[in-house]
Length: 121
Image (cartoon, rainbow, N blue to C red; front, side, top):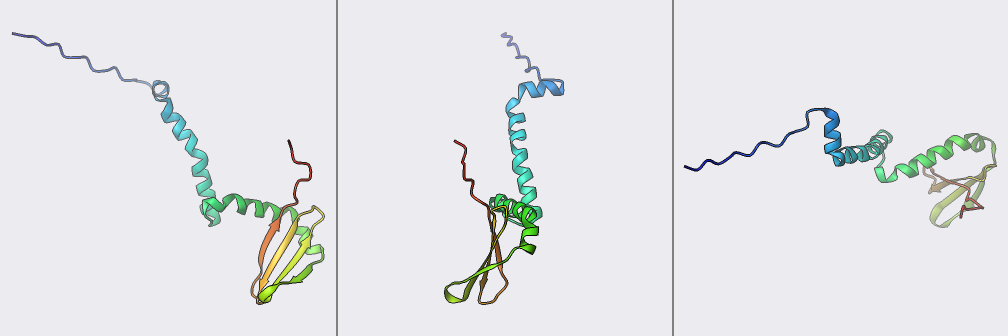
């Protein structure tokens, strides 16, 4: 008669902090996905694709900082090909608002931020 010993089951962590020590990759993967989830929520609230979120946020920032300029500064106009009209507003901050009119339809607005003249090396 042969007696075989049954192996003891592995001892499992019994407290929450022990799981954090035992499974650090779980913590890192959950923590690393929080910014991604946050960006998805912001993009959903704004009604844009996540890949366009940074551009939309920059345009919003330019609108906020230059709103007074749009109401007070003059507008320059240039006629383009095939009924395209571009109206340009130059702000004291150096930022530029472009308004594109195609065949007298509603304008498309696009802010262009002033380029940095002394880029950091």
